[in-house]
Amino acid sequence: SKEIKVTVVSSSFAIFVTGAVVKPGKINPDRALTAFEAIMEAGGFDQTKANAKEVRVIRHEDGQTKTYTLNLRSILDGKPGEPFYLRSHDVIFVPEKISWF
Image (cartoon, rainbow, N blue to C red):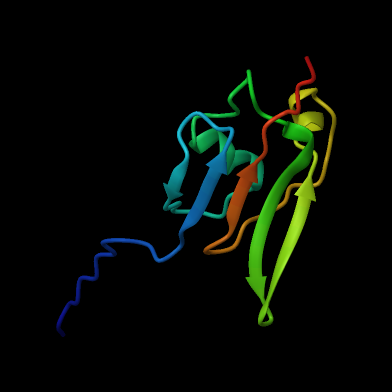
């Protein structure tokens, strides 16, 4: 009998995090991630700028671009919520807070 060894070098599962996070960019997770976990992988929210109540996940599905708005502030406040699991090539955008002078 012959043995075959298979090594996975990279994952095609990519997520992009942008906006008011510490380290925006591409994440290549090795497991399923929630939107909150992906933001933590990007260094977390930029505490001086981020509007965690209006986080948007942009997803291409069924030939359309869909946008989901998440209130992740509630998770930071310790409130229970449904996890939003990401799919490959989702884009997470953390907007900045609007500050009035």
